[in-house]
Image (cartoon, rainbow, N blue to C red; front, top):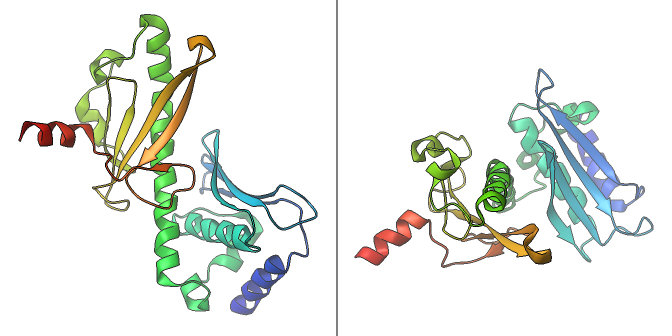
Amino acid sequence: MKNNVLILLLLYIAAGHSLADQTYVCSNADGEQQRTIKVIYQDQSSKVPCEVSYQADGKEQALFRSQDREGFCEKKALEFVQHQLDLGMACGDITPLLQVKPEALEVYSPEQVASYKKAAVFSQAVSVMTPFKMMMTEYYHMEGEYPDSLQKIGLRPEDMKTSAYVSDMTIGAGGEIYAQGNQDLGLDTVIMLKPDLTLGGYMHEWSCSTNIRDIDYCEHDAELLYPMEKKTLQSN
């Protein structure tokens, strides 16, 4: 029965009977953590262009976008809701419908599931890095330059290895924030958030780079290395 209901739900969404923005709110058992996944249509009379946004800890970002693939955003949103369920979250009335694994319905290929899960873990890693942007910005406005060590912003290198989402984190001389992936994301994964001074130096606009592919909101840089690794290569 659950299988039939979910298949009908997927077909209903893909057919585009309702073009109102679709919102799924997921939370943990005590309600302290809340995450919102939303399908946003740029034109309420058309299924495309569209995007899937993800909001957690007060931060919102676009995970997926499509200009012309109907049903793409709806499918990605449901996949992301499924991931929240896998993490132990509850997602309102839709939770019982999505507790059937996508693989059992033969809707998704193993490659699609793996790619989606990697994007979800990547998003969590970027969320861990986000608070450090404020620390770098505040230091710059006080000192007129970016810190060149974690110690200058009151942090210890050993404390950067305790996150469940990244295996290590450090900063660069130009205000860059680097993170190294965990076991799920891949220990060879590197993410860099880089500040760019705008509006006469009063604003810091951040760009994202990574050495893995297919992350819509992060530029691919195959040569990106974690700073410690870069120093090791230069010394050899």
